[in-house]
Image (tube, rainbow, N blue to C red):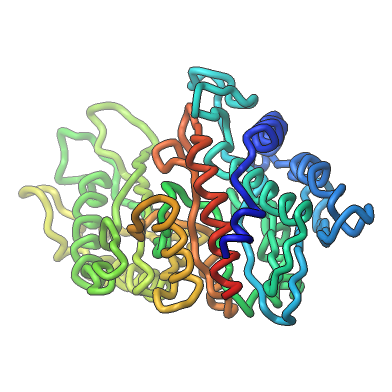
Length: 435
């Protein structure tokens, strides 16, 4: 073990920072918010290949096997393999994605699209999420290719396209899985390197985006008895829907085991209506929001239940608690009833990592040795794709070495010392899995 750790050494700042600088220099071109901003991940692939090709079978300079897989022009994935000696013995670092969320330079104190260095801080869009990890794992693979340690395990790194947006599919890890290109990774732990704060993230939330369209009857506010107030109906209906949700999906005992900060939640985050005078009672409005669901509940069950709540409220709208003698949701003389329509956007499932797997224990031990303590955590933030991997039979564990506080935020940065601890954690994972 000591010999392998000495061979892999520490993250070399003089090699890591110039690579990261090139990657952040591409961040403007890998922003993912279609249709306006479609990333060109191959701009990042090119820099990673520049670093790894000299140590690859492609050039004859080393043992690394490189596979640049593209499903859409300019938007590739890169699979890098360092072969071990024992067939079927494998571990992988996956999830380092080469697209970023958008950045508006006007909101930043420094240029988001070029790397700037402030002591330990490495600043720019993608430093934490996730170009910093792309550079980090590339440096690990480069060191394996350079030093050629004799390993039983094959070590695979998968750099992926299209993680930050799910409106277009069939480009990134979903396509790689579908084509069987990651099948052999099922034989060992798969570390998804796209979280933060150096601790194992063992649980994530599902996400169900919903929209509730409320229809009442528009009328003059001085004649409130002739209106059905869509705003009031929306408020009362939403309160009833939320009450039923929290009754049916209460805090789950496993949330304590996994250290979730919150139980499942269902709440509004946006409210809109067509506009009108202060003396008009609105006849329609739209409330949108999301459900964040701990992974011990099923996303489809929740969607079905929400639809049942809405159907029941519609059927019994005259019984819905209202707000005063003329806040009524039915006008019998005119045969008009208020109504609700519920729709969903694409939902994601959360994931609960296997706390009994070897991959998890190895990650914990490596983290404790390098960081000084280990405290796995869970959040109802959502990571796309990993639940599907788990369902396909992969032992998915997740970790990351950026900063949660700067994730998707303006003035994003990471710390070189954190990234170098990440490198040492990876080295220890490889060495523990040799034993």
